[in-house]
Image (cartoon, rainbow, N blue to C red):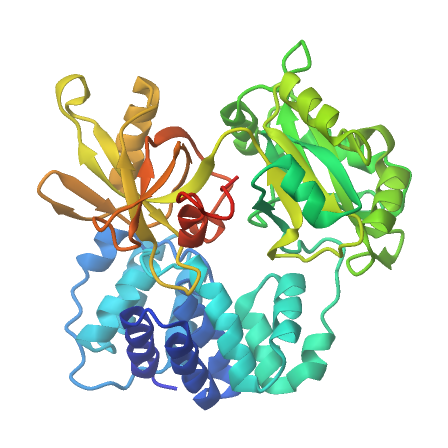
Length: 504
């Protein structure tokens, strides 16, 4: 398959807001791809090479001396092969070898293909919100049920691998994916509730748990082998030795646990989210200790539990972790909410006891209740400050996720809630992912997620989504979340007067 076909399809997907049109374009391309081209083609279209980071920086790629080819001739397979060689090149003389490989690759590409490759290799094409559209396209191209594709993706965690299975082996190949201890699955997500009462009325028999201001973790134990992953499936085992040791001592042979971890003060109240996250890059056991709180059990002693009701998973959870279960219960929901807030936590989670574990999905079976409106939004740009903030990037441009796979949709700006320390960090980090400048505005690649507190939303023709934030202020950046985890434009619209729900 020619890389030019991928470039053309990528441009067509970016040019339309129609989900159906995106799915049709992607499915059409996948239907033409040979077995060797499927995996790299899906990876390219999703905005990230199979190899991950290639180590080629922005300056290297844009300074490369490689005149473009006159006609398309570079294949997807050859592109993937050269990227693989580039990733594996290291040691003495590797700098020149890498330049030679890049020159070969870009010299075989047309001008349009060169621009696509630059954006692909620098992360500018990465659009996690496109995953849902791509899953629908894979199902369409392979003529298999969408649910079968989504489940296989949930269990494999890898979009290109899921596509290969669907397109080469159909529904039977997709059904072969199983939960594998040691390989993370995508976490189940919660939806915001308007209030505790509405959540209780909607869900019926529930368990109500503390909603903690910590970091989501998934823990896998197989004998003495313990692995710990973040919500984005990044492994952090080496950074959290105290969690590894605790799980190693649990009274079970194999287990997969979903939970939260956070650092506590001497009085038992939570430390700041930033302090908890700082541990994920540390290796010194004498650093701030983390405490785990587990709230779900996906596998126990050889038995997979994804498809059994939460009430049964809770029994397995208590059997596996004992006192390390997150606080909560099935009675006195109002008191649990009060106790959670008094203990310094965010609110509560309300979960239907008859629900299965819908990994990677944001459904209504889990609902989060918090006293304040917050949104996780994508940073699109920042404006240079003035007065006391001269020399700092200050006013943030904020975008909500497009559920139909388009780029984030701008919904407002804010310069409130920022400390001097955050301003300095933000100025440094945002310039590192700059895409271009326009007068006093620095536009950035959509990579950072920031948690915003707000008073609501209002109708506004000023922004593309027709809605704007009211009195928005920065709470913190969320390094544990990707743009694909950001709240959607629908969550913002739900805050309009007469909307159905508030975000969490």
